[in-house]
Amino acid sequence: MKFRTEIEPFTLGTDIDYRSRLLALGSCFAEHIAARLSRARFRIEANPTGILFNPASIVRTLERLWHAEPVRREELHRSREGVWFHYDFHGSLSRTEADEALDAMNEAVRRGAEALHGADTLLLTFGTAWVYDHEGRPVANCHRQPAAEFHRRRMTVEEIVAPFARLLEGELAAKRLIVSVSPVRHAGDGLVENSLSKATLRLAAAALEERFAERVRYFPAYEMLVDDLRDYRFYAEDLVHPSPQAVEYVWEHFTQAALSERARRLLPEVERIVRASEHRMQHPRSEACRAFCRQQLTAIEALPEVDFTAERAYFSRFLK
Image 1 (cartoon, helix red, strand yellow):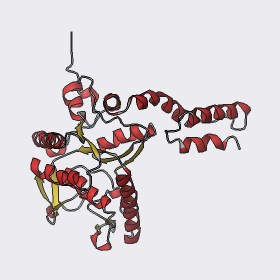
Image 2: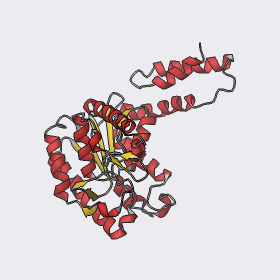
Image 3: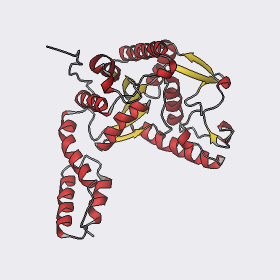
Image 4: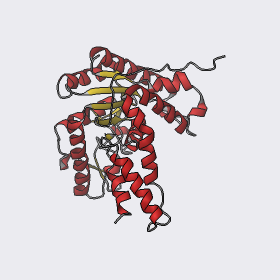
């Protein structure tokens, strides 16, 4: 007997390996997968300017990063609490001093621009088609400003596809894209409105994949939660975010679909070394500790394509 309609194994043909350079932009679900890739020591930068929920903000961020467009003082706004913020940046980059906010945001732009220009593959996750316009332009974050200052609307499929198509034909002509729709349910928009939003995003992703078949691939994270797992036990307590078990399930599918065969073979060994670096040395001056560290350094040297900079420094510290 079958009790689930499962996603069958598939491949995206992207063959991401340890020499790949990756940039992830989008909703918090993008950060889940990016965090897994980072822990597996792939070379990836994730959301340097903060979480991006809607496609318009992803486009705006890509444009800023591609041109390394600095944030100017006149772009900042000041909240009633005296905090300087930017509607294209996450609140974690806001500061009580304008110059400090500019420094933090421009450092994020610098880091993101470097990652974008060096990346061969972009991981983009669309979270919602609902946007909040401020002075006629969608914002990435409302920063808890009065609702009367914003106009809420739902983007159309063409409104999403057109700017991405322009980027893919121009600035991103040499990049591969893996596009997904976040399975996180935006219940605050209303369940009916959330369904409309996800359907819009899915149609936009399909249109991009069909138009740029050689460089754009769709990864069905949304379908894995909604059609495969489809049970509240695979959601967190808030009933909208995936549970750790669900994220692990999607990660397993991602590794099979997107990574090269060698990268998949290396994953257990990389995880073993990373876990070893998290091990607390009870007797750091003992010969047993030194032998353990030498063993880890030998394992690291056997995997030259993996960036173990932090782990190498950690283990070497105990041999001085």
